[in-house]
Image 1 (cartoon, rainbow, N blue to C red):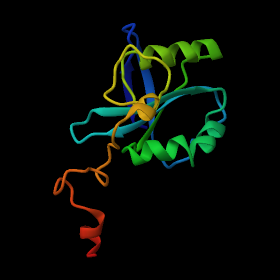
Image 2: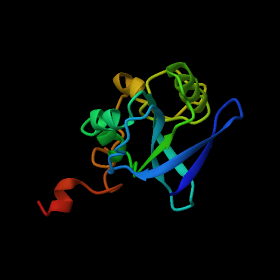
Image 3: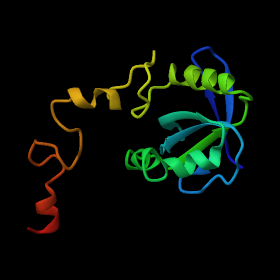
Image 4: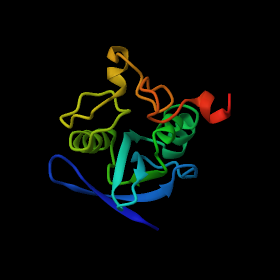
Length: 148
């Protein structure tokens, strides 16, 4: 099984198992997890850090919500870490990782500053989408792509 190591703001290194984002983990164990995008360079772009007392249930809770949005943002992997034994330990791990690696979907305050987070959404002056870019010719319009 593929593994990926993430370093927290504290300097601590955490070992994560890597699964396809669409595959239900099938385990009811407590865990920290991450929706991430595998980049051609071999690096990973984190989209959302989380922790749960039941990984399979949380995956199903996210399947049509946050997990779906993470996939729209390019997430194609689910990273899972079983190091945190208690809820407090898992929350500390999540916070340590969130404070080093910015994500667009976590709404908690973080010392790592992403360009855009969900918390910024109400303040955005224009949508950041290739389909809604107001500049002509940047990505083409959907009408032009569809032949209309």
